[in-house]
Image (cartoon, rainbow, N blue to C red; front, side, top):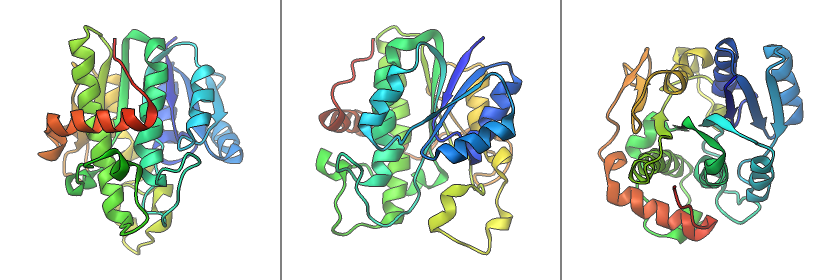
Length: 272
């Protein structure tokens, strides 16, 4: 039986992805910050193949603890996210959106790399707003400044970082001769718990979580060569398909720079 780990799996896209992978006879481990939400998810999914672990992906110490509990893995879905909160720092002092959406997942992927199987894949959850993202120019900028904090620009920057991390990880895996695949996905416009800081009367137009999860499910289950980017056919809505992503998301110099900036904050990640 294959095993999948889904961060932020207690609700929204993560919960729907867990539901589908369980239906495909995977053992699924979900994580989340709230033990009550995880118990609620366990009750909804009602499967003996489900396990949950309470974890805050923005806290690097908790990420290390999480990684130590995983023995082997076939699919890692870096799904947990923050969208547009007021400025806040993680336990280690990094801006919360970047700590959650990128830094914690970079560390988790690094710590689990040796536990991935030959046919494993890592899925990185980006967003349509990655197209508005700007590459960070330094490790200090990646960590985040309170002065001039624009919550929505920062969110876009984190989702560009997710795409760049996905590209660079796949590139390094191929160069190292690894068969692990790194794939990027985005849900389009979907109604999930992320919108807590962005109430809108138009959310009824968005896809439901099961529709939004289709891109990352496809990235998890379809035959891939690595480096693909999946998103809705109509950008915000529709069945998932291969997309090219923004020009910035394909800039490999920016991807290498981001990797080096992240290593200076998190520690070296040598892909073998």
